[in-house]
Length: 436
Image 1 (cartoon, rainbow, N blue to C red):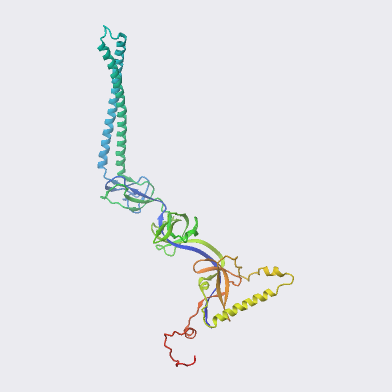
Image 2: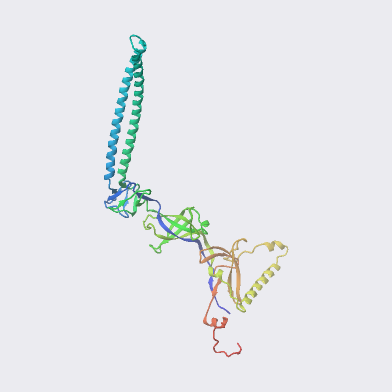
């Protein structure tokens, strides 16, 4: 008879989890760029008075770098001169309006006197017409002067805008930190020329708060349905072997990516980094805890995968045990209490000490094998959570300590006597035709 490797049914906790790989990322990162072109002539100082570099702590408004501002300073001076010219032109236009208003008053008075006299011996017709024309010209000149004032005001506004633009470009030569944080990347050196075109070049990368860290995890589409917001997660990093970090799912991003026909989603796991151990861009091995069971019966997964080998005599013993089990079940049905009939038949028996009743039909079922003197006996169980090594089981015939088969013991003698002989192996020590 074959010998079996067994393992006991244990009572314990089962934690089901989904494993994935991710990257540690700062929760909020600001990319500081340049809006003007030019050569970097100096770098700023951090809070400790040292030159801005990697890991420098900065405050909002801290000078990070300076770009050569000679050309931009000249533009500001030119814009200021144009602004002063525009102001002078406006004053000149306003004075011209006053002059045109005075000429209009004079022309209007002359025209009124000419109208009283009319064309006569005292006022020649040509003189009469001249006064009328002078009055019309004075009105037109005043309208032109007023339009010139409006034009001068518009030119002044344009000059002010030009000065504002030039001043802004000059200010952009001094690059400052927009937030308080830590510089995690410096991408520029003194003497380097910054070229700003359609896209602003990135000079510094600042993390606002490294005490709050996220892990961006790529999860396969087959597992995404099991992950919910605020679900607990644990992860480890190679930099700190043996230490387990804890976090919770913050967001499931909807922008899936496809790589070689494999669809993945990015999950944000929020975690606390008050001790500063986690550094940006570490690789994290993450486990999302999808379910837990406490103080339940468990069996090794190998026990659920085990199937008895089809050797001669062994399956006969299994079938014999199955038949005996059916006979015992029928015998119990025949010994019903008098007067209770169908009620006794429909009542469930209480499980044995330490056992649990299987759940309703529809739950996943499995079979484990128990070794007895006459052979193997199959025991049906209801399956629960699994952590990849142990699986939660429920069944009337299982209790803590029951030995279930996980495999067959292979010894040298067993292999020589029980295993089928290969036709390709020479048979030594037995004459042809000798009885076996």
